[in-house]
Image 1 (cartoon, helix red, strand yellow):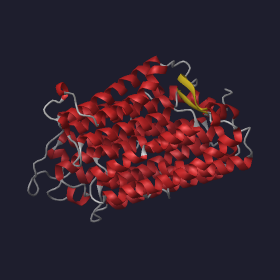
Image 2 (cartoon, helix red, strand yellow; image 1 turned 90 degrees about the horizontal axis):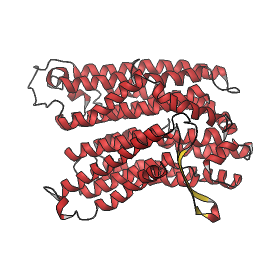
Image 3 (cartoon, one colour; image 1 turned 90 degrees about the vertical axis):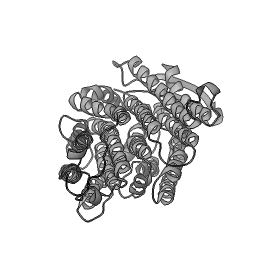
Length: 517
């Protein structure tokens, strides 16, 4: 188990180094480009196999206990340790991350985005995978920061070199926002580590903030929270996200929404809730307020983009929908209750699966029609997917109704539990304010349903024989292979939520109790 977890973090880095080296003569295939893309599929596939083996070997009777742990002294002068471990909170995120990277590598093997060398593309993808996996596996504050920052450069180049229109501006906006937030976050992490005389996240969580004064906790929550909120992204620190998603290649958008946004909310749960509980209790009402504003703002922005004549970009619309969906995650965290935090963690996984599928579909739609402009796709000679590509239209409709929270699919449980948590927040939090947040969040679910159904009506419906009919391919076999796992897991999590909640709930209970329960 120890080896599996360490292997998952190291293998993508070793694979990235191998990707930029010349391929051995017997492995070149038809071309060097094909060889390096096959290498990317192989490495991510091996990492996914290791993640599945780790899941099967995990002691599901003790999900609150860190397992597969490694604890080695790294910088003795600062007491920084290479401390790795996985519990019921991080295991689902590790598994989803490994799955999404494998599906993106598989998709890219058949549909590589236009750009420079495939070697650089695969190497950046593997470095990105190593950083995201490490973020969910490390148990030292400084290692967490290094892993958190490790993803910035690969994602910057994926957007800037393989993206679409306005990619340079979007990439610079992405990295400037996240770097500025990270500088502030580092100060907060150092404040906690120096004050408590340890950077070990397990020891800090068990202490439950008793070594930190109220002032220290307030300053730490403010500093760390800003850095995490930028990555989440929380309104009003979200403005980098629509530009980055619109410009990013398809797999970049999938990974940005499916994995990178989860790093911010994971930091709230893993660090701020257990380590600075008094500071979080002070800021929780404000976090809840920002969360529900994000829910409504994201939905209204999507409705505006979906409106006829507004020339709304479908990728941009889904990016704004992420602002709303992550608002539910933040609302669950702000409640500081087991119900709300479990809902936040469930919504994290559901959003990664469903929005990852949506970005795959919209990217494929853009490849077929040469545009993601909603007015063009809904015009007389537009998509009309039900008639022209029925399987593609059915998948898009499925992803849309899953995203709006249809009962029986994964999107429903996270949002419902987050609202339940806000309805009955932790002791000491203002009940009246959180009841208001619950009402506003519930209204946000109606707005979410409205814009997604408008998108389905405009893109999927219509007369396929109206106007000159463009040649439209239905779902290709490689697309079917890349998208089917996301569909299956969305249904499985929706019909059997205990599969995920059975892992997260004991770990959340112990986390909120400071390791004493």
